[in-house]
Image 1 (tube, one colour):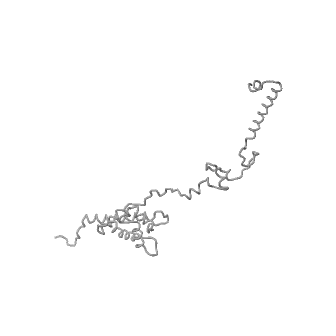
Image 2 (cartoon, helix red, strand yellow):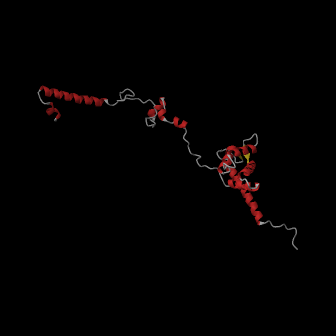
Image 3 (cartoon, rainbow, N blue to C red):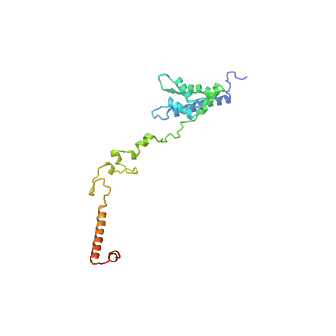
Length: 222
């Protein structure tokens, strides 16, 4: 006779279903933790702020712009969280997903809708695309445009916007003999030599005229 005290063996399908369910919860909790600590070095992963909740809903495509919008996500978060707190726990997170699943997967049973919701999130993490991208700001551009600098700040850069280094920060002594800022510095010697050469030509011409020589033949043909 068969032993009536023996318990019936659990069906393989039931065992697999329970294992899958446990796996889903584990994967869901891991996704929750990843989003909970995103952007906050002090976060423990046990609670999630509203900003990260919204990011999760966006990155995991819970927000589809049709059945679920950003407004729906914000309303559910405010409804689930406590009145005096700004975060939700993992258990509250699952409540929020259950609330949204009814809108996201209309026409399906509550259980099926929740399962589909979990599938959107499992194994996912924050989308980091464009996180480090620097956006040009008109204010920053205005503050870094050297052509608009005035006063002592203007003196630290040349016309091309390149820094002058020490010369732009300190008053260096100019021993050239020219007044500071004189545009024709260094041209004196050149002018004097030019004047001397002109004077010598006039002197030679005077000699030729005195001796009744042709200046062209005697001076410029040399």
